[in-house]
Image 1 (cartoon, rainbow, N blue to C red):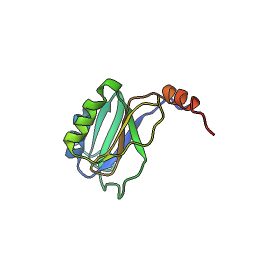
Image 2: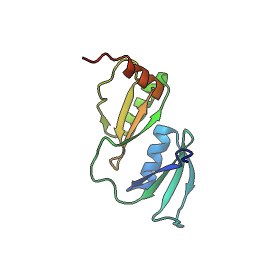
Image 3: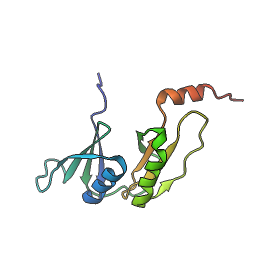
Length: 137
């Protein structure tokens, strides 16, 4: 039986640049850096973001962007603060997809290696309730 999410791993071209990105936008806590001791396939660093273990490993970045993404929940009242953090870093943002009333707000942005992140204010329950209330013709 699956017990939950263990961790996410992203391959990045520059560990230092991605570390700063994670710390500045997500308040990520760095809990490990391999330094010269590589225990896996390449130098790596581990972070905690909202209790989720995120690993970054040095390697070739994604060749293109896509809609595959990682979404983190943020409080609705802090949406503008997080949008400002993303703008300060200077990474590309993606236009929000059309939404229906009640499913929350989202901010989409790519890192320097084409990974897409989302900061979302809603919950699964709120989204399902919003979808249930939509009248389709």
